[in-house]
Each structure stands twice: as C-alpha cells, then as structure tokens.
Amino acid sequence: MSQSQTQDDNSQNTLDPNWCSDALDLGLDYGMQTVAVRAGQHRTDEGEHSEPIFTTSSYVYQSAADAAAHFNGTKTGNVYSRHTNPSVRTFERRLAALEKGERAVATASGMGAILTMCLAYLKAGDHLLAANQLFGSSIGLFNNYVAKFGVEVSYVDCFDNEAWANAIQPNTKVIYCESPSNPLAQICDLGYLSQLCKANDILLVVDNCFATPALQRPLELGADVVIHSATKYLDGQGRVLGGALVGSDTLMQEAFTVVRSGGISMSPFNAWVFTKGLETLKLRMQAHCQNANQVAEFLVNHPNVSTVHFSGVSDHPAHELTGRQHHMKDGYGAIMGFEVKPSSNLDEKSAAWHVIDSTRMVSITNNLGDAKTTMTHPATTTHFRLTPEARAEAGVKDGLIRLSVGLEDVDDIIKDLARGLDSL
Image 1 (cartoon, rainbow, N blue to C red):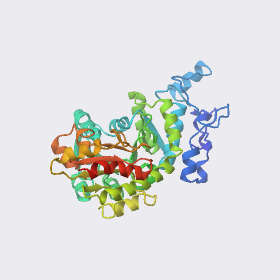
Image 2 (image 1 turned 180 degrees about the vertical axis):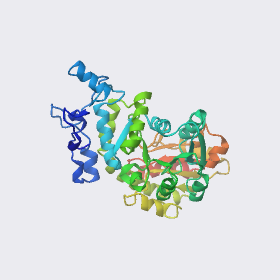
Image 3 (image 1 turned 90 degrees about the vertical axis):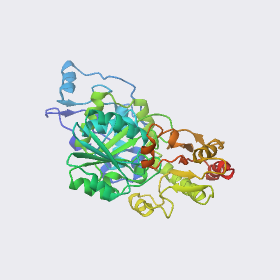
Image 4 (image 1 turned 135 degrees about the vertical axis):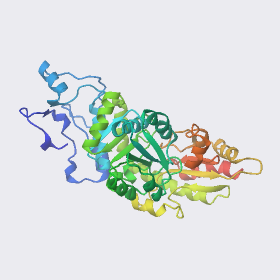
C-alpha cells in the first residue's frame, strides 16, 4: 500500500501509519533480489535494521473511542493477532511483492492455505476441478471433507488440455493444480488453463510451492490465486510450518475473512522465519536447480532407473513448456521422481526401499524444499491413504522415489544415491 493511500484523521476510514509505510518503494521497479531482501518492512520508532518479531496476542489503544474505531472499521489497524500481526504482515507484503500480487494472506500451514481457498471460493453445489497429480493430503482434503459439504470434486490428467476443457461443468467454480506437481513434478500449461478459466468465469488456483516466485510467477501467466506451503522453499531449512495465498485485493479479502474467523493464522515467529528465508530464496533456488540438473543426468543414465520424472530432462514432454513458464534459465526446480527397476530378487517396492535404505547422508523424510537432500517412497508415505486406483491415476507406482535435491556438494548426493542403485 502506498503512502498516497493513507487517509487523514477526518476521513471515513483513517489508516494507522504502520499499515502503509514500507522501507522499500516498490514503485521504483527494483529487481527480485532487492525485493526479497527489503520489501514489506515497516520500521518502528526504535529504528531497527532487521525485522522485529511482534510476539503479542493483542494491541493497546489510545482511548475507548480509538478501540471502538478499530473494531467498527472506521480506523484500520491491529485488533488481535488472530486477525493481523506486524510480523505476519511483513511476510505477507514481501511475498505478495515477489509474486507480483496485490496482497497475500498467511496461514498456519500449506494445507491451511488450501483449506482457506476452499472455504473462501467454494460452496455447496459448486464443482472443483483438480489435477490427478496432487499431494496426497490435498486429494484427501477434497474427497473427504470438501465433498462432505456438498462440493462436487473431479480430477483430470494435468497434461491433457482437452480433458480439462471437457470436464468443465456449469457449476465449476475453481480449477486447481500444482505446477510442478507432487511427487512427479508434472507441468500444467498455465496459459491454456488461464484462457479456459477466463472463458468460463472460473478461478484458476495454482500451487506454486515447488517452483516459488524465484522460478515462476503464476499470476503473470493468468492465474487468479497462488498457493504456497511456506514450510518448503520459502523457509528453505525445514524449521517451521506455514502457508499463504496470493492474489488480488478482492480475492484475498475473502481469504483473510476465512483465516480471521477460522483461526487458521500464522504465528509471528514463523512469519519472521519465512521473511528471513525470502531474503535468500532466489540464491538458494539457483543452487538447488544446478544440483538437480546434475542429479537428474546421473539418474537418467543409470541402468537401474527406468524413468526420471523431471522436466529438466531434454526429452521430457513438458521440457519446452517449463522453459517458457519458468523465468530462471535452466531452472526446472529441484523435486523429481524416479522409478527403480526391480531386480532378480526384489520387486519394485523392495528395490525402491533398498535404494532409500542404502543412503548414508540423504534424509529419509516426507518433507522437501530443505537445504538438506530428502527422499521418500510416496506409495507408502505421502500417498498411502489413497486407494490403489487413485495412486495409479496419479502415477504413483511402487518403484517410485521422490527426491528433493538439496544444497550439499552435488557429488556427495550422487554418490549417496549410487550406493543403493549400484547394488541392485
């Protein structure tokens, strides 16, 4: 919000100065790294250089009339930290600036952001159309809870543009996809989906968790809302939980009302961690992508790997599309899936487990987007609650391993993966 939007004391809605002043004037068209380091901060009278953590649940007013003005909306400012908090607001401002959105709304987790999206933009009788290739918990939320309240849910292959068009119904209100997706890193044609949504008055919601604004800005490609699990790359070190939505002021006001009323709010400390994480996001993503490209090349050429799901591979069906949608050169992300071939004495699942269990450095965990390389077996972890049929539709096979390539020396990552692959 610019200084020009501040209203004086005689206006209908006066605005506290700390809701409008920013340490960086975004109107000067700074580069991404400058925005990541400086945007969104409001300095207090203490003149602090680094962003403070406002660990407060409530706020003090100058008078009874001042308190009443905050509560009845004639004065805009902090009311309660379930609603707003200065540390959370700094993170929201900075992320919105990086995504080129008007506003961001922070939530307690990535799944909290997806739930907020559902509650804000869907109602009984509506239709949610989603990609088959989604995080297992997202599918569980849609099928077990969103559908429970009268929202129809259906899925299509994220690659199949014709299937997207054919699956639209008169009551379709939201198209939801991950690009890249979890765990196979598939890519959706966001330009096509944007045109499809605009022609049918549908909201396009894109989970940008794997790419981050360092690689891709879906709003610039025509999306209406961007979703983040900030837990992943926005933090980058696996320290705290959080999520966010980014979009227009109008759409984010609906999301904010859900967060405020439902208590899906982010803690001030977590917001501070994410704000500091954003400072190095672009630099980290460059390093992640460089490592991932080399790891993918190793896997593609290994005789015990049947398939590598990573758009950075030159013959991947979405290689060219990713190059158009991702604005960082050679930036295909750092999440990939690879399928292990069965051996003479091991089936696909046992072979995949052998590769995982043979590592000495790589962390066996379901988290991703960490400085540390992590791996998991999706069929028995992140997607184990899905039916075998649903896993098959999502492409989650028993031999599949999901790899999140970290920031260690890339030769050490490759050596660790080779221990199990070479011994099959």
